[in-house]
Image (cartoon, rainbow, N blue to C red; front, side):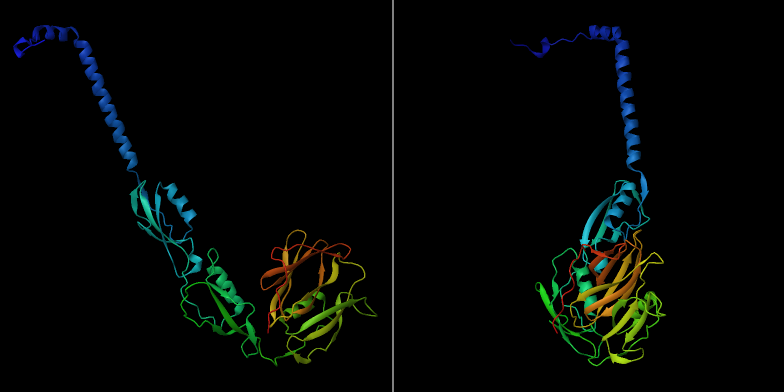
Length: 360
């Protein structure tokens, strides 16, 4: 079928007549479209206002990442995290820097740049000479809490008599500032203290158990306690004899025998006894502590002192059900519960085991 442009004919009069007949419908449809367009514009306007809400950037510098994220979430801000090593092991996991700065006014939904510490990076051997070996061990544990240790201390260290306080590091190998190319074991030479140190024996005869424990904490001799029933005018619960006598001059940390007159009954409701433990011989006096934990959970220290190892005896007067906890170099090694009949029950400890004796 063929047709040409002249064959196409539009009847404008009929079209005009039809528009006049449907004028109301056309006007209504046009008005509806216009109203919908206006409504859409209004909604878009208010949505744009909401997205442009202004908020103040909180100060999260020095805070833990989890805390910082909660504070930013409350402001509808979002973190952009960067990791960086720092000079202080205690900074690990903390916010070092932030951008924009605290107090800046920004739109909600903006990302805040946070620089977080990965801890310290160790690339050289530190200088340990002059430091206490126990402090160095704790320091290294702190450095490598969650990573593979790059530096370890050879166990046991080498010990020698020296005028420096016992436990002081005298020499180290590798030397300070040696570059670390992988896990490294450092051999230390540690002071045992002066060979001929002397100490004055304190007078504890006539003292109560609590008073004797207080003297032990300040003394440089080791008391070996035994007990017996009171005789004559002796007062129960006190030290009735000691050998050598008070004010005698002896080698430091040598043994002083002492006898306590123990009560045959418990007039004050307490259980009396002597905590006893055989410790390994140590190259120098280790710091030990005996704590008493009452049945209600209150903890108090009975005695804290230095001990060279061997026989350890500590008298006590405590409530029934009290737990005695022995700690050596900040590690719990023994725990016993005191029963009402005076017997003791050994309890498990988390760390377990006495520190072994180090070679001389």
